Length: 144
Image 1 (cartoon, one colour):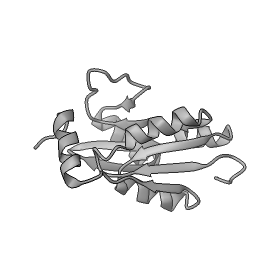
Image 2 (cartoon, one colour; image 1 turned 180 degrees about the vertical axis):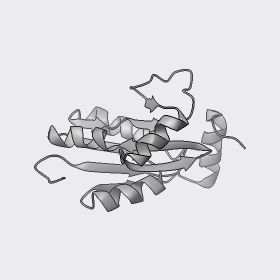
Image 3 (tube, helix red, strand yellow; image 1 turned 90 degrees about the horizontal axis):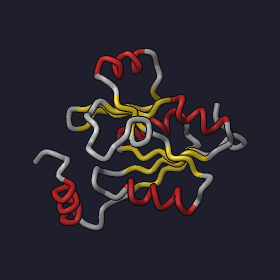
């Protein structure tokens, strides 16, 4: 169970392309005691991604079993793939009295806040819809 003596959960949330990863990296660089939670996903790894560093890459079957076992504090479907935060990631950081940063979508953030109401939500929005579209097109990872 969470309490401030254990650590703080910071939930950085916003739409894909809003800048969550950029802001999260800057926060972790500025505050080395802040631990970035690694999410799990069923999507294939991108060329530069490493399992266990960027995501825990799982088969859809494994992900479904982990959901059924109650292993996730949050999970959601985005673009046909499952994404989620493992309870073990959050609890490990909290038990070590580390503050933990979750970079997740809005659906996931709502679930985390239900489980951990003392979490600190930070909502990220792109500067404009045009900027968001430009970022997503440049990234070339989402379908039209």
